Amino acid sequence: MDLKVNLGIDKQDKNVKVDLAKDNIHFIILVGSSGSGKSVFHYHLYKQLAENNSPEDLGFILFDMTRTDFSGWQSPFVIDRILDAEPALSEFEQLGKQGNLTGKKAVFVHIEEMNMLSVSATRFEDALANILKEKRDNNIYVVFSTSRPSVDVLTSKIRSMVDLKVVFNLTSKIDSEFMLGDDSA
Picture 1 (cartoon, rainbow, N blue to C red):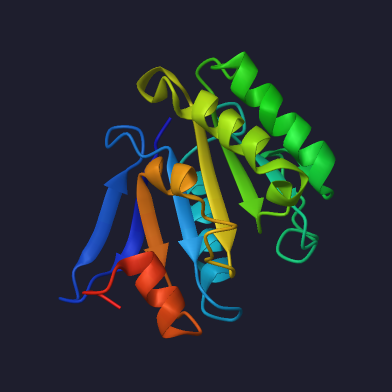
Picture 2 (cartoon, rainbow, N blue to C red):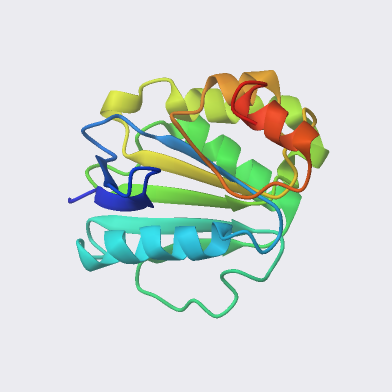
């Protein structure tokens, strides 16, 4: 399994490349206003992963509560697509309870908006903590994309577990300060 990806270009025009497995990056958040590039980013991320792996080595579970980004994605890499918050949260909890259920297969869990938190923030946080507990021995990778970077969505517990934060254009200085801190906003 090859989990090396190019994330884009930094401020010095240098390619930013990571090996998600080697660099132990299991929880990525994508934050930005609508239309800022989150969907384009995760499309290119998943395209790179699919090009470098087979469906036997890599799969995607898509929690697509917005029903927009993945509605037409038909692929042998897709393990499951869940469109409603309660079933998505239940499946997410099962992943947390089962630990490394994937064997050697890398499974990317994409969460489009955090509607699961409206069902139960505590259940979501506990499931995420269980999934990330043994990261080095785990082939589950969580990518969470939101246009709502508030304390209700990105709780302090969720933020404490983030391995990689990709911030796109945000609509307000308050959102920027929340995501980047006062010095970077």
